[in-house]
Amino acid sequence: MTVATAKANSKHNIAIAQARDYVSIRESKAGIQQFDKIPPASIHGTSTPQDLNLAVLGIGADAWDMITRAPRPAELRPFRAIQGKTHKAVSTPGDLLFHIRSDRRDMCFEFEKQLQSQLGDAVKLVDETVGFRYWDGRDLLGFVDGTANPTGKAIPVSTLVAEEDSAGAGGSYVVVQKYVHDLSNWQALSIDKQEAIIGRSKLDNLELDDAADDQQKPHKQLATVTDAEGNEHAILRDNMPFGSPASGEFGTYFIGYSRRLWVIERMLERMFIGDHPGLHDRILDFSRPLTGTTFFAPSAETLASLDPDS
Image 1: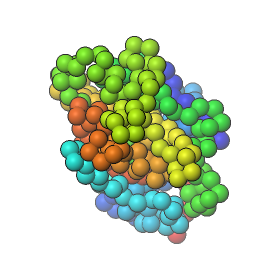
Image 2: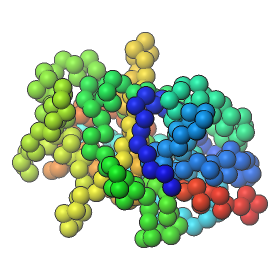
Image 3: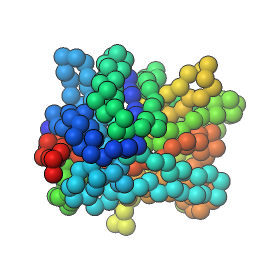
């Protein structure tokens, strides 16, 4: 499998659908085996003559058994809502995730149009978001996003399920959340206060010192997850800004790929509940999640092995 990172000018289409007719989805090449030649996550971007760099099919926990009739990956479960003292990570429904990325907006449009045409009434679209690259890879808050992403050989180690789970081997857990930003109040903060919340300098993206254990921690510190032995576990963030000034709704679409679902779940708990409880991630005072859904993106080999007639 080819391992690649996001291209500089990528455009994203993210569509989430609920299943209406499992049989039709299984029989549809767009639903299952249309993807058997397309690697399973942004870590497997492929360049084609048509400039389509990426297409991901993710399947939700409630739909996995009916659509695939294959053993379920060990950690696949619905997104768990998290209620902090001040903010809540909501859980929203979704059976299928389509994450489409290209250097060309028309390719994203055409690929999604063909998917919808082939799936027809078998699915109901519940969310569609068009993302874009902002400046030099920054979010709409003005900070560089994805700085802590793994690189090189660390990418598959952090994102692809291995021999520990044969049902999920070669695939990746995908968690998505659609955050809207309160830019007016965010921009009213001084640069120093913004940097203290993020944990990095705004202009040159330098990492600031960690806070002491009993103090309010910045986003970059709360988003770092370690296990009981002190080993740090990375995820791959393929986040993209979305929205328009005229609509008044804009923000960041979080797309996290991970070898282990618990890593993303732990990260979100640290953000919404805090470390310690009550000391939540202050970025949430300016960013509110509208959605929260978990999927599993099977490997191309797994998709190719599925029998729609079984």
